[in-house]
Image (cartoon, rainbow, N blue to C red):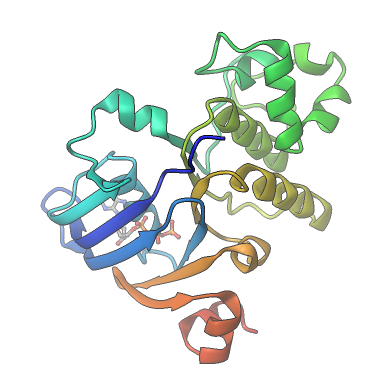
Length: 242
Ligand code: DGT
C-alpha cells in the first residue's frame, strides 16, 4: 500500500474576512498523516474558517497552512483538489441517479468501484433498498434521501476519489441513534486508511478522534484526547456537559 499522506499543519495563522476583524488569532495545529482529528467549539469559534483555509477557499493574513509540509499556496490547484476530499454540511446532489451522484468527479469509475465506495460508506444497503437501487433518480435537493443518507453518499463520493486527506464538516442536523451509528461506522471505515480533519458536532465522532482541538475566540483553547479533556474539566467538558 502507498504511504499514508495528508498531514496538515497550521502555523501562527491569523485570518479574518475582507476588512473585518480577525476571527482566527494565532492558530497552531498539527494533524499527522494517518490520524483523525476533531475540531470543536461553540458557534463563531472559527471552525469553518479553519476548514476554509485548509481547502484554500481563503488565505491567512499571517502564518502558513501546510499540506504534507508544503505551503498550500505553493501547491497547484490540481494537486490540492486531488489530495483533499471535502464533505460539506450541505451535501450537494444533482438531479440524476444515485450512481451518477456517487461518481461525481470520477466519471471513469466502474460500477464495481462505485458500489465498493458505497459499501465502505455504509450507503450500499439503503441504496439497494431504494425503488430503482443505484438507478434511482434523486432531486436537486435530494429530497428522496434523509440527511444522514445524503452525508453517507457524500462520504462515498469522497472515498471514490481516494484523497489523502478527508476534510469533513459534520452535519448539525439531528439524526436518530441508528443513523448516527451508521454514519459513525461509515466515518470509521473512511478514515481508517487516510488523514481526516473533522468539524465535529456529534459526541460519537469526537470520542473516536485521535486528538481533539477545542477552539475558542479564534485560538486553540484546549487539545487532547476525549478522556484527557474530560479530566481537565475545561471548555470541552462543559460543551458535552459530561
Ligand atoms: P458555527 O458554524 O456556527 O459552529 O461557527 P464556526 O466555529 O464554524 O465559526 P466560523 O468560522 O463560521 O465563524 C467565525 C467568525 O467569522 C464569526 O464571527 C462569523 C464570521 N464569519 C464566518 N463566515 C463569514 C463570512 O463569510 N464573512 C464574514 N464577513 N464573516 C464571516
